[in-house]
Length: 125
Image (tube, rainbow, N blue to C red):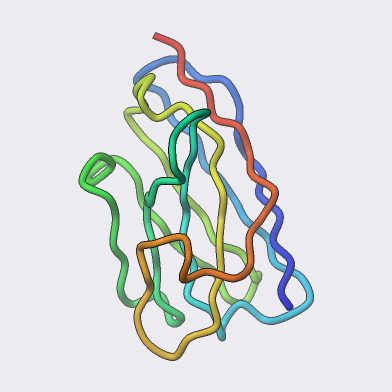
């Protein structure tokens, strides 16, 4: 089973940027579709962005389109989330997730079977 570890969260002012990283160990990430989700207390985990095994296809939630970009470097066994033009509504714990699949990159949490521990992102107004 692959193990995932996020980093790069923190406190940023509205309009700022952060880059999250998620490093994998135990297995090569090239066999996995990857995604980022976020969660705030009292709410369900929310899809943010996903990327296919080869990195050729990405998808993102409407709320982050044009601001967030998911990418991966299979040689480094790492997936990234570049977040620009952050707003207070982007505050939450961000999780990376992985699922071994040949095709596609699901947008719902139940499809993923490996999760990181999460990294807190706080955007101040």
